[in-house]
Image (cartoon, rainbow over all chains, first blue to last red):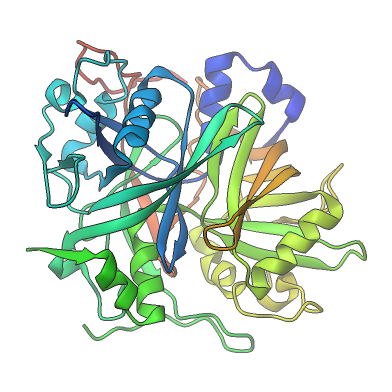
Length: 215
Length: 215
């Protein structure tokens, strides 16, 4: 049985109930850990679930930063060093990834607090998460303030990408399911995936067909 | 074995290979059909995979529109009527959802072309997808042009939400997996999900615990 909720219904919900409800509606989401450091080398790690593709040439992406304490450490560090890392989350360490969202003070690194391992790679002052199978270093380009609710859109460009060699298909597709990346829904629900199909580029007057690749 | 790709490597990829590669890196994504109509009532339906949560109070979300022909129909219609619908995609009709991305001309409704069923609900001039289990009507708020690559961010507010009654948990969580929503990766890979766990709100000095709900 389908149930309707009006905007008025949603606005009358208790605050936490509303946050949980509305966060569920956006569908399954990207789940990444963003690694940063400040000018003293103090590291920070935080989960984000709003990462989205902006463009391939140049390789751009965006994500939303909320005006709360946890996100502010990440934002301040990104603005300080102008770079950061994006690390896909696997089922083997999703509990530690979730734990980074606790409100640790600025002197505590979430790497230390959760046991995830910082690792540094050439040309990037921000730490990667060693446990992560898909890692990206990125350069901050621009912050766009969303006046409707005080959040900010961060626009960034990829600088280097690290992926498992056996997860790259012949056409450039990276099999993130094979690499162990998981997805999330709502504020706190974690899900593994099972591939249904890859579909060929859609054309008018041609039935949808499965994409067959020789690798 | 991990393989590194520099920004230079990515920029030198063949165009289609690069699009496939970079689109894979953002992780699993929300998969929705956006339903619109123009002032004459001509309908349009298109898949989007960049929907993200912006805020719960008021319930806001965003998505990215690319400057191509398919997306332009959607954007023109949103700007004409100031409202549109968002419909989660299920495994039962993901092939039809994918087929909406073919470059149909402006006189062809993707509803007719793919066999998906338009349905109208009170106070919304745009059509919903009858086959979808989670449907949202939304009001257009603002278009933010992304000067870096000519895309646009659309910011919108939810107006009404329709969900299966038995998918709503006691704390406001909507079980979109139970509702049949699927996720996607890259440009063309579709995946069902299996819940791993919901985790309780993270606190410093408290180990991560599973969320147990009595419904």
